[in-house]
Length: 336
Image 1 (cartoon, rainbow, N blue to C red):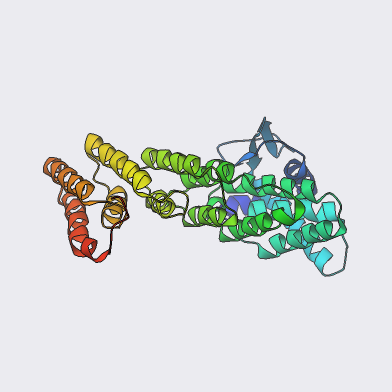
Image 2: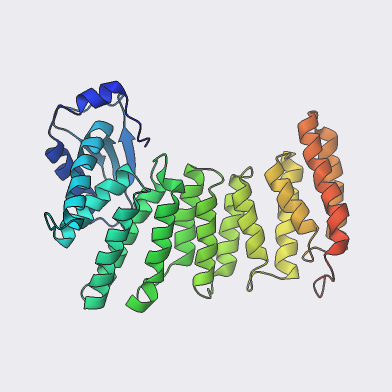
C-alpha cells in the first residue's frame, strides 16, 4: 500500500474513531490462525459501513485503507511512548502495535527490531519459544504473500524472516525447506515478478541445512519456471540448484536441459529470460557436445519462425554468447 494520502483521505482522518480502528485491525493480526492470512487493502471502490474497518471470509481479509491509516497513527504513538518509557506496554501490546505498523509500512525497521527483542527475551527465558516462533513466522509470511504492493519485495521483512529462521535450530523448530520455497517464495514471486528478495531468500534456505528432498525442490522450481517462463529470477535460481551439491550431475542437468529445450521448441519461446538460462547452461561444463548441438538446432529452428527484430536479436545473442564462452568453461563433467 502506498503511503501517499490524497486530500479526501486526509480530510476523512478527522472523522471516525482511530482507537476503534486500531483495536479491530490489531486484534485481527494477532489472533491465532493456522493458515496464512491473505490480506488486501480496500480503497474507495469498497465502501464499508460506518465503524467497519475489516471484512473477512476465512483467511481472506480486506482492510479499509482509511481505517489502517488511523490504526497506524495510534500504533506508532503507542510504540514511541513505550520505547521512550512514557507509557510502558506489555509484550502482547507491543506485538499488536508493531503488527499494525508493519502492515502499513513494511520498512519500519524500529518495529521489526522491537519484535526481535521480545522474541529473543522469550527464547532466553525458556517460555513458549516454539509457539512464538511459529506465530511470528505465520505473521511475516502472511505479509510477504498477500496482495500488498510493497510487502512482497520488502528487504526489511525478508531480512526479518532470515533472522527468524536463524532462531529455529536452537529452539528445536524444524525448517520446512520445500514448504517455504513453495508456499512463500513461489507466491511472493507471483505477486511481484522478478522478485530479487524472494529468490535470494530461496538461496538462503538452501544454505540452512542439508536437505534430503533436493530432487523434489528441483522439480518444483522447474515446474514454477515453466509456468512463469518470462521470470529471470526463477530461471537463475534453477541454474543455481543445478550447481548445488545433491542436484548437480550430468544426468540431472541433461534431463533439465532437454526438458527446457522441448518447452522452447514446442512454444517457440523468444523471451530473454529462458534463453539466458539455456545459453548459460549450454555454455557450462554441465552440458555435453551432443546437447550443445541440440541447443543450436533448436535455436536455429525457433529463429526461423520469429518475425520481430527484437526477438531475433535475443536468440542470436544467446548463440553468440555460447560460441564466445563455451570453450572457456574447462573440462566437461565426467561421463558427459
